[in-house]
Image 1 (cartoon, rainbow, N blue to C red):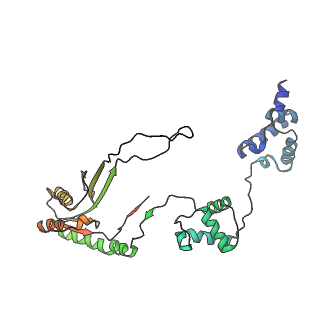
Image 2 (tube, rainbow, N blue to C red):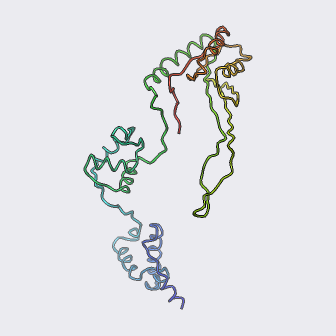
Length: 294
């Protein structure tokens, strides 16, 4: 019969989500309270027959609200609250290489090693992950910063040199521009594809590398200029680009740029001198503000 077939369709309640389990509990109790037989109710839901009596007893003791789902607290932490705060202090704004590790990234394995070394407590990688989530330290893709940066020099340039440069440009009626260079290449990006095991896949490509570069300048008031070129940047090319940039400009220009060798070449200096003050070059400190990438 259909009832026999239903009885055979048992569901392991442990495989259900908290929300689904709660819905089934409430539904089963309401059906029994409405007059259905407990065995038939549980058989129709594919659940163990005796479980309904525990639910009914729970409702009698504390009401229907007692059927709500409760998240399991999980295993008790081996670390004290003070030790957890210490783990947070290790990670916040710090580099694991300061503690003798080879990697500059805080991984669960490294944090686990620190806990074992400092506290003498061994915790699993999974437990470390739960701890970091509790401390509000999620995994994130870091910014890449060069070791050669000089934070003090950069701060001095941003707080002292740049404001003075803006004031001087204002007195002279000059426009302050910031120069940036970028480029793209046609090298194929290697990804993943599918092929039967034992057969290495092949992807047609070309060995002819193509590239395109862009030189751009933007002012604080939104003025923008750019030029595209395909050659590598050298001093001669940079002078050519500066000529195009200055073409038709009446007001003086203060141009802030990095210390690329092409920017500091003698012929560039001679070209700037030939403009009799219409153009000034002002160089950023090494690895200047914003010199970061992902």
